[in-house]
Length: 84
Image (cartoon, rainbow, N blue to C red; front, side, top):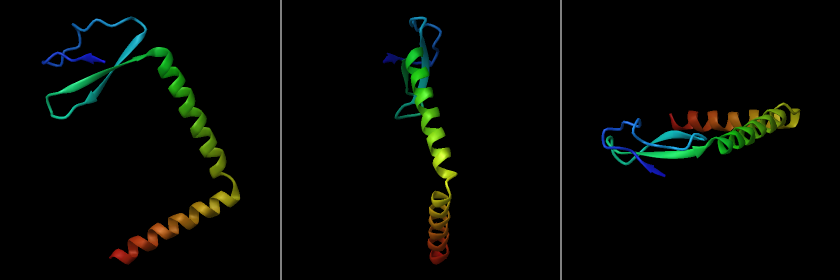
């Protein structure tokens, strides 16, 4: 983890070429943490997320799962109506 200069300027921070900088909000409006993520790790994370998204999409297209989704939506709508 690399510290951000007080003025938030990242031009003076030296990082290896294969790394990317991601800003993550800190505890207050003036503090930030910089997370250095190596590029190959970001590629692996993207591949994993794409795999999970495809699995979710495939499962949601099955008729039995569509019925479960509709039932869950109906339960949420009923709870919302009961609160009013």
